[in-house]
Structure formats: structure tokens, C-alpha cells
Image: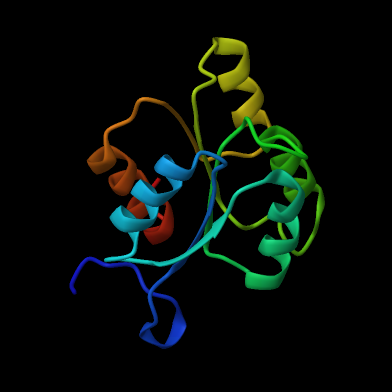
Length: 133
């Protein structure tokens, strides 16, 4: 599995997918699980708890979520000393320029709008996880 990012000890990198749409969540899980250890979360209320408990290597985060939106989750992660170093990639239908700026200001490494190309998403995830952003 050359080229696949791994954590210390050779284990696959951990990616937390926070997405409320079941079909997109399933698509992302299938696409990512060949290369990464994938955890899924379907709402904003549970997302911060999942980040704290799982210490993922990357969070793939939607903006439109029940309970707490992705911008608030990213801001909370950025403000928490133990979470601020975890990279975030937004994957969302919200693509107005002001929203993209808000996402980057909240700490996202990338802001990808739906519809998206899975190969481009995987490339960005690999770049973030290998430190080549």
C-alpha cells in the first residue's frame, strides 16, 4: 500500500466523516475505507464528542448539520488546545464566496463544494495527511 498515509506504527490514518446525508456518508465511507480508518458521524452535536474521543488525523466536515453547524464545530476545534492541530476539510453544498472565506477563517485546510469529484477529494485528503498542502 505505498502512498497510503499511515499513523505512527504503520496503522492507517484516521478520518472522521461528519455528514448528515446518508447517501453521501455511505459514498464517502466506501471511497475512503480502502486507504483510511473511517469513522462516521451524522450530526453536529455528536461531532465534537467524536473528535475528542477518537482523535482523528483529519475531519471531513459538512456545514449543514443538525444540532451544530460545521462552522461552529471548526471554530470550537480551533479554540481547543487539544483539537486545534487536527486538520479540517469542508465538504459542503454551501459555496458562496463569503461561506468559503468563513470556512477558511474557521481553520479549514480546504473548502470543497458539492457536487465533488471523489478523486480530487482523495487527493486533497492525502496531501493534508502527508503534510504537502
